[in-house]
Length: 296
Image (cartoon, rainbow, N blue to C red):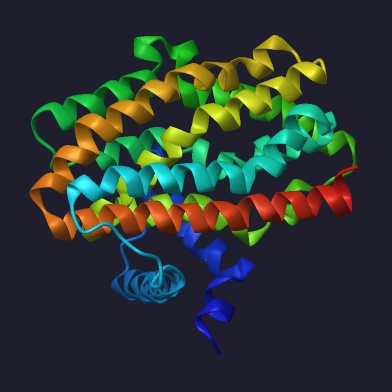
């Protein structure tokens, strides 16, 4: 059996998803937090197989050899990324109906529902200005101290309403989640929870944040076109602006200083960006497929 056949399966990704959710359980659910050595080894073996598959997928991609080459390499990847996903976000902005938009946003819960914890994990071990930049990002995730403005709180309010729309259409959301959506969230969790992958986590967050304003702006446009309530749109509107600052700051004040100090780390960061890009393409293609077969 090939690595693709092992890793690109709903049951495989769902097991990882449940494990990561249990690891990050609220302390009041302490009984759910896994600590069995056999289970932890099984998860490690699964992660290693998945990681080998993702590395193999990008093994032929050219990587920058120096920090000076990185900027052009990254700018090119960013342009390719946007062009490759524009078909979906143009559709969300201009044609998708409310149910299709709701389905997409609900799938985003695999990332957005835990993104504050991902950001928290990304700053571990950093020093100086890079730590402050990520701390500022985290403070934004925390609503700058206002409970109602916490991003996970705002997302939960939006997702709850949109899940209702999906349910009204007779769609059983848990049975419709593609494995690609689980991979989209699992990737960040694996990179955050395995410290050896810290470079890949920083790279993945970097390109995710840099491309977020375009994705969120298109989603907001579609939501407004479908006359969704302002409180449902609020989370996405907030990210249309704030993530553009985060992306630029992560690049200039975190990623560039780090790759200038360590070539091994530079390779890990670029791998994180490439793997995030590949997984994102698969994820958006799975949404497009659902919309064409079930959404309209």
